[in-house]
Length: 102
Image (cartoon, rainbow, N blue to C red; front, side):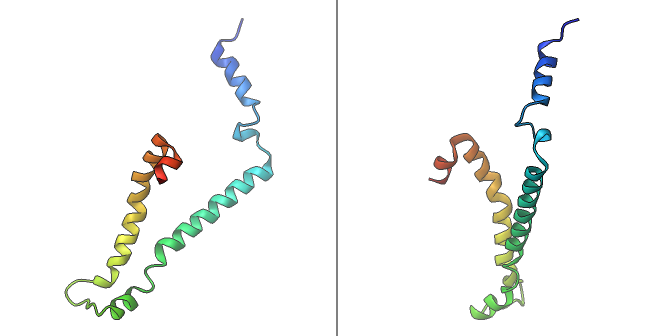
């Protein structure tokens, strides 16, 4: 009984060095650590603007009596962080990184 082309390609891929299952443990852990660090940095970046909210409002003489203006920078920052990649990543994918940044 002969194997079909799909089964043959699967057996080749199962032994291929670029298949992540076949990577050495050291490489797998390195990737996990890089991802963990990036997640930590993104979380710090998103919340770092919340600390000076009241100080910014005080500096620019903005009152929070009718609307919480001091947290407007936080809202804009986090909205940009959420929507920016949704717009930017498809542009980078379709037109390339260089053209996307230009």
